[in-house]
Amino acid sequence: MFEQSIALVDAADAALPWDRLGHWAQDEGEWEEAERCYRKAYGLAGGHYGYCLGTALNFLGRFEESRPILVEQAEHLQPDAMSWFQLGVANGNSGRTSEAIAAYEKAIALDPDYDLAMFNLGGVHWNDGDLIAAQRVWRKAIEKFPDHELAEEIQATLNKLDMLFLER
Image (cartoon, rainbow, N blue to C red):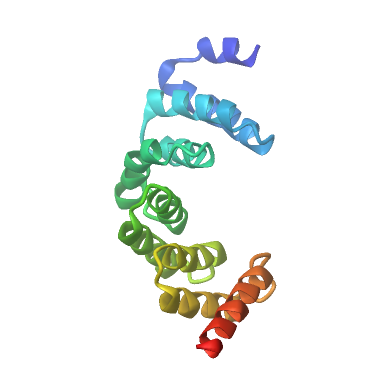
């Protein structure tokens, strides 16, 4: 019903209702439907509608597909911490470690209180085998965000790592 109403709207004005439908689907956890709606908005108006499309693609695990959209967002259209964070997610999950690190660092530079960006940055270092960098970032994250839902889990990991180093 709502889609039929959007069809009656001038194409230039139809992107916003499609975007709103995408947010509605996203709020319901319906990422495939959100991606479909965001793609329609992006197809009609491009530009800033790419952030939501790129985010939906990340949630669907389609990181390679999200990357070019999120690069455009982060570098040109919406160079804010959230765009850089989503680009970090896409890069980290598509094997682009150095690009993921740079994106998360940019997100943190733009918003020093971006807790998940800091925890994810530590995770990228960890997954890359750079345990010293992971420890350094995670210790700062835990100190800065002690009540974050990841703090306890990461602290336990760091404690195990400390025990391994002590045993050597």
